Length: 217
Image (cartoon, rainbow, N blue to C red; front, side):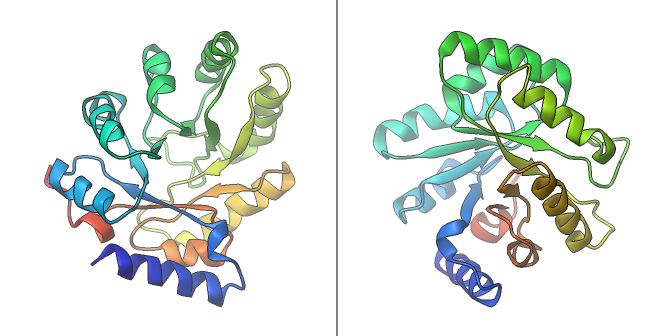
């Protein structure tokens, strides 16, 4: 599917939801994609990308940024505390703030630098034991810690619904939690369900295979 077709689907979903397409950021998830596929999307004029691993991004994006100005890079996968400074060098947004230890170390690094990327708290809406993320009943306290004691500018919430459940239920839950905490950023929706996410208020959708084709590794 072409990037143009994805843009059209996003616009149609926004129209049906009575929203402006300008409210929605399309993150092209370029993890494990060949460089030529990534460059074809850059040449088409798209500038917002997502990566899951700090090391992979470090090997890919500095060179692209020299050639293509205005790139915005989002970290979508888990962040290890020993990679915080490298992540802060690379990324404009982090979508996987998921535990107190990470939040505290991130706050220390951000304070030393005097600048902070956009931050999204990952919520484990399905309460899956194998998945990262703050549990729903612990979210309010975690948001209060990040905003209060740690002075982190939280932009919104992120979720990855269980593969065997209706994603709209998790999108609706994430929206309620965001509203309760006065947050307007909702990072939710991927290739198979981004239209449903837009209907439920997504501000950031993470689309990989529908743009690039299936990953090669």
